Length: 124
Image (cartoon, rainbow, N blue to C red; front, side):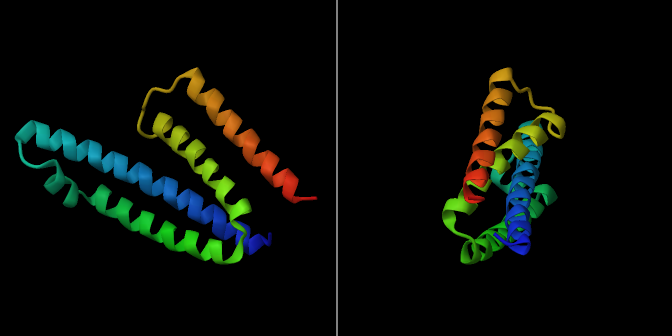
């Protein structure tokens, strides 16, 4: 895999994770606003800057992912999605202040070990 392809792949994974975190933050606020003053959660979400920005970032990540798939074999690219799970767990714990258990961290570590194993196998 070339360096530009790797950078594009990492951009796709990181932007996808970032979009998901923005969507979660926006939906949390939309649900709270709807619960407090009534109204539709869907309408609150549609007018939430975080939800709209999250959708835009997620759309950009989808384009980056499609471009990646045109250049990188799926057997190499897809395991990198696992990195997105780790990023989301980290951001959920640090940015959104969500509680995570040792099981979550242990599973995330196994995901990273799996990704390293896949990449090591490609170096041969």
